[in-house]
Length: 124
Image (spheres, one colour):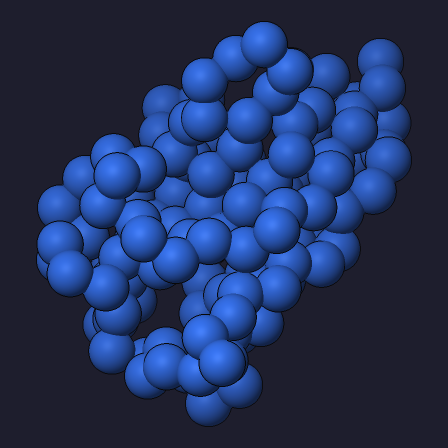
């Protein structure tokens, strides 16, 4: 069964840190691009970080310098280290896999496999 399961969300004060994890199963995790997206209430889903199978990372301007995406192919796990969190970072966070489109963009349409999400809440 192909599955992505996020964990690590929670509530934190502004300036704090969280580390999200995404456990993948049922497909060759190491071969494919992975991404992190987030969606706040009333807003569109936003791609914030993606990483190729070889470990090359790209970030949205909104998180660059504060968030770090990484992957452990031996553990089939994707991570998102989030530092200097701001209230505007509050959202549901999703991991997703780009199986067919070669990690060329943050378009959510390119990411066909999604987890169920984990909530991050940052208070001021």
